[in-house]
Length: 200
Image 1: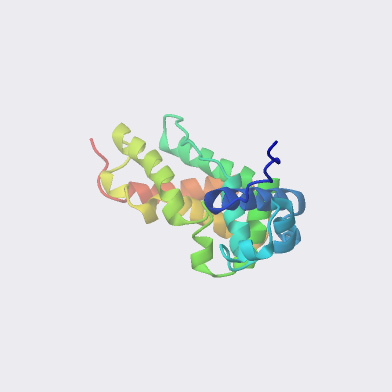
Image 2 (image 1 turned 30 degrees about the vertical axis):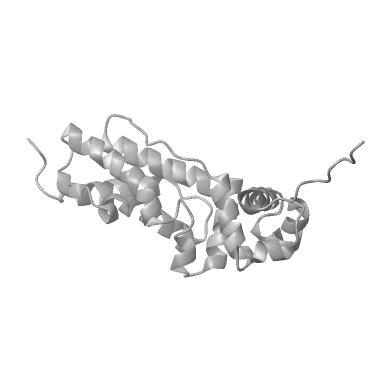
């Protein structure tokens, strides 16, 4: 009778997935402050060297794990640009004040001004958020609410950048709704409307 085979050693993508799942679980349980390479290695059933071969430090691992926790956001469709933009800002505001948002704030604080690290956070990078905002603006162009010249990534994402600035500069986990309305009515919509003639 053949002896039973021992557990197969995980490699490559299987091991990486196990590490990321373990790191994500640690983030949910303890936040970034409680995340350590040792805890993640133990939870994943591997050693710290396996982690360091893939991520240079716990911040890089924390960001990669946070990406596992985020979901794809579908663009709202309220039938008007103002309603869509307000809904996107309100969603971001709710996320920022959620437990997952608390993890995001910790990661952003740890990253400081390291643009290459911030760019890896799916809801903080202009490159990552631009498609969602361009979809909303594209619908507005199709409805005749604004000109095609508004379809520029930096223009499209101005509102979310301003909201993010509120979080960073004021250090609060949420912004009052009147701030969101002000961003939309006093900055975003006037900017969009001045990006070329509105189709007749």
